[in-house]
Image (cartoon, rainbow, N blue to C red; front, side, top):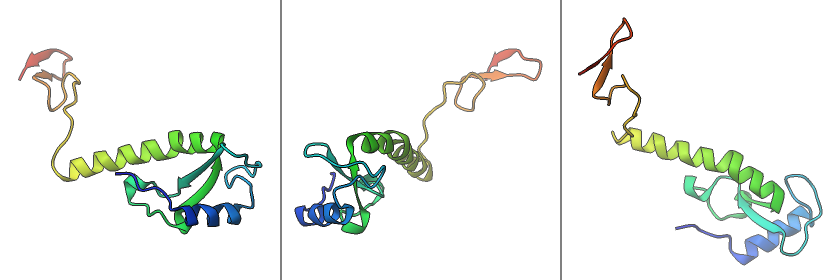
Length: 110
């Protein structure tokens, strides 16, 4: 379950940012303000002032898509691999495939 920032943390973060985006320093407008976790909530980031960034819509979208989503996906993959669970690769000749590729390039059943 996602943990949102309390209102007093949002107020303190907005005052710290002085009405400017902490990503690109653009002026922030009502309805275009996003309070973002520096360390994503899915990766253990706490809803505290130290972990809160005040961002404009554009900066928030870029950070989420280019930084947070890939990092969260990698954490999930590493966690599953640590537990001995891994996705079967459908690659012919891979360890999970019923086919085996020989050195001469031919493919045979395992």
